[in-house]
Image (cartoon, rainbow, N blue to C red; front, side, top):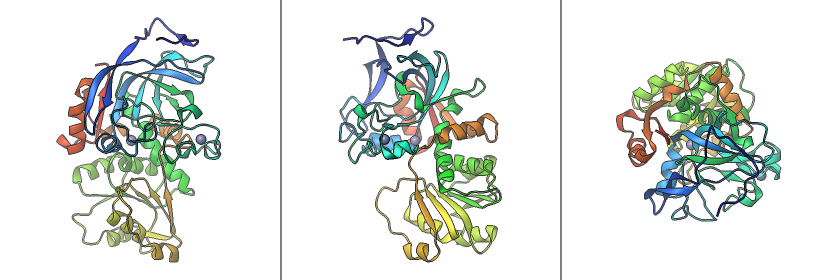
Length: 379
Ligand SMILES: [Zn+2]
Ligand SMILES: [Zn+2]
């Protein structure tokens, strides 16, 4: 039954009643169905999704469930659509929305907080207290696309206006899907606080967040910027994005010493840790200088053991960073608009909506050196 709609649409963008959408059944079981198109309410718009990127976290959600949580439980067999890194065109406005116009190109942050709790009031909407221990409370206005509410492996999505960032005409759809990725490391580096030009940053793990972490650190004036990984092809991309030095741990007998050979015996000022392994975390601790700071940007899959005594003795800080809070995406897209780095170097493949299973296989198995894979729901 169609509900009455009090917002605004345009005949330039006719909106169908149903759309193509992937939904998650049992683990690793996705099917393409016809799903009803939601219409936007107060402070919301309807976005026609033009591009959605696949993230490693999507692979976790589709195979295992967490960190997605739908109706207080695992996301399986709940008509849930995964996917959280998307951009598109505004095609309908909720009542009284005048912040955006129909036809605007936008990229979309994952989290919309409730706007009422203590953390949301501080701008920390990725840590909304109504993204509770169990699930996001939709009735309080909380959404996390592809985690607690429907995501982007489909053709249309309703989003809160606070989650939208306008995309300039000369930025491709594919590049615009990377704004949230760049925004995540921007959030990390700015939350650590104090990074000034000429301070050293080590990034461990050249996945999309790590690679764009290199780019953002360099654009913020860090130097030297050192990227650590295990694949030369990815380290090469890191160099193009601004790494002054790269270290392949397979070729280094002692990666901590190798970092100190570059930055000096005291160690580095900052580490952005994007690998999430016990080894990488302990390496991060041992290469950080006294009073230095470590950003935890990866999700380890289990509790791990780290050298706390060394951290305490040396006054090393460690920050858990979730997502793209405090509108860091707006700062990240400014760097991208100014062409301070070319985020599109991280994009490697594009597939159509009906090819999602194949695209996920490419992402999971890193076929053909895949890094960021983008799905175009309308081609
Ligand atoms: Zn992601
Ligand atoms: Zn909140």
